[in-house]
Length: 418
Figure 1 (cartoon, rainbow, N blue to C red):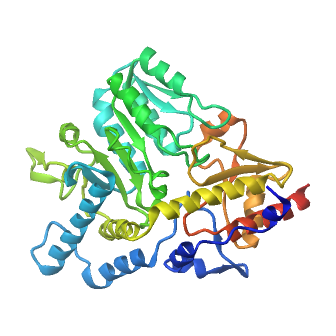
Figure 2 (figure 1 turned 120 degrees about the vertical axis):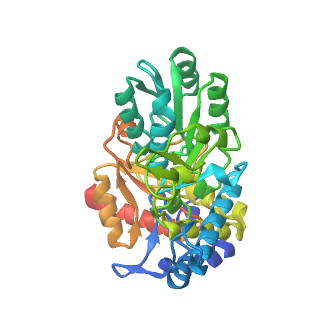
Figure 3 (figure 1 turned 180 degrees about the vertical axis):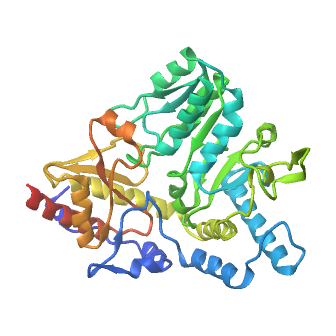
């Protein structure tokens, strides 16, 4: 890059400027500065279309679902089930009943671990993960392993943050693997795993596979289920929807064989003190009153995405990541963690002499929101030999000027701590 190009950012595309108007929070100021929200991998912001749809339900349409014959209940039920249909189409599910609403990806993984894996695992069996998994895709499997006598084995990650595919395949062949759970895109490094290849390897070995697509979905990577994964999971708050709503998508024939994860109302056919019979999926796994407004908000988020020129917006995200990577060359002592050739728009880094939490705190005084810490990936941090990183994660509403602000802040931090 030339010296001029390092100091003059590209112009923000008009499409991005238009999209930014859909997000009211981007008009906010923090410590007297315009908000530059670069913590999208933790939780992405909501567009007005989602906020308004949830508000309309809460103001004019709230009622419990599946249980009432009155107008409000019928209307709420229709909106809730319409959201299920939208998610099914979004993921490429074969039928709406393959979609189960949960509180998030974490609960969805726990559901599969308890209802699918636990009855099938025996002492000595192996649950295969990777070293780049989020805690939500580690801890539930450790709990099941402890209960069944199975073992959790993690396929290694390279120094660049890529999955060692050769070793992954070797583990599948040589270990008694009975369950595999892998992340599509790393929340801490941005690495995109070759999910289709991983699914093919698992299928060849006769191993069921769950794919965590929570970090992949907001960047347009929704094909894991179509690629043949047995289960996929994600959280609504990663994809412009409210918090507290998530999705498990699973093959219907498999869901039918799984016992309920929780017991309660609305998941039963008949209850007596002599015993209980349960409804078919998905109702079997949605005990109690669900997060109705969250599901409706998730449906609205999918509608919003459908209204956008997504290829152009995802190309903009990639351009933001490239620009940040180029700007990093200006700053001695800055190291990027996660240099795989295929990445989502996650920029994790350390700066010599400055703790990640200090970086995040100083940037906040400039109105710049980033994440600092281990990003719920302590085993990965241990593998890389670090305690944590600072992480800027981009969405399609971010701008090149915000990347410039990030680096102006980092230069200031380098002077203070250097």
